[in-house]
Length: 314
Ligand code: UDP
Ligand code: MG
Image (cartoon, rainbow, N blue to C red; front, side, top):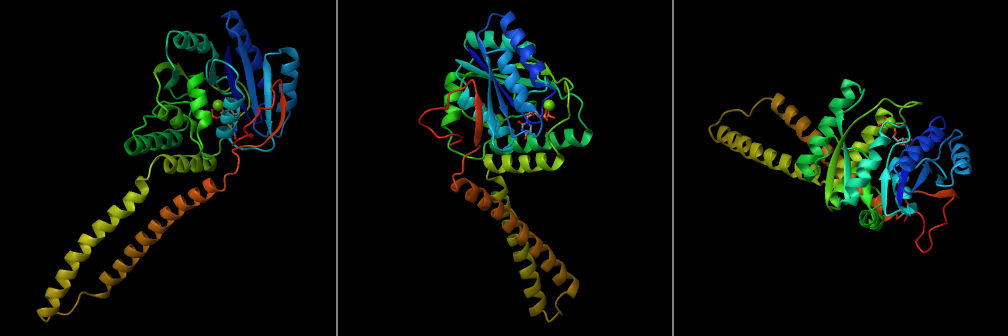
């Protein structure tokens, strides 16, 4: 059986269409399935739509969060609720073509443990957004070696991979990179991003920016090493300028003017503050992690037993 995990936040227009489209495709392909909708604290009728979809098709299941915890939390809640031999992650807005699922499934049957769907085109996105995404992926690749260009959350994962991800202890997760970090036999398949079926994007620029910062810092310590590098460069400058000043002093020349002093104070001050800021950012992340709060809190379930043993979101 394949578990299809569908995070949904304020997607009431999409739930039933998505459920019937994906359900239809999988039953036509004679693949046993369950659809796990994760309602990420929606403020609209998403949950009642999920309950109705469950009444119409018993393969539809649902998990409801107590508030909005973000897509990452929703993905991990879906992974821990999934009962299938493999799991597919897909967006609720049908931007990820569900027609690909049977193909991904057959790749899985012939031995792939992770099937990544990569974007061959990025769909309709603004130039700024594309630029932002490109530089984020470049930074991730050069600093952590994980190539995310074209990566999406549309993936098929074998049971082993799902279990490995469920074992991850960290609270601040970045699913896209973690699923490649765990390794396993990975195959790729291309797809074109389609326009949203209904509704609008749930990501604001601020939310995306914070998401990018969090993900960079959870996969690389490069920013901290950069501080050291800047320190070394300044040290070399200091040496040259120091010798210059001393030579001037012993030759009886007057020291350089105030402009040099002012510039030095400003530049060094800015570097020190940025450095402290970067360290502070990592520190706050460590603080978040050691609080050991759950990734999400479930308020209701439909069609799913409460997982025994492990607490939710831990
Ligand atoms: N989503 C979520 N929680 C959030 C934001 C988004 O579960 O806080 C879900 C959303 O319902 C959708 C998927 O994540 O199924 C992708 O979101 P969206 O389509 O808004 O992102 P985009 O495709 O514009 O990148
Ligand atoms: Mg979308």
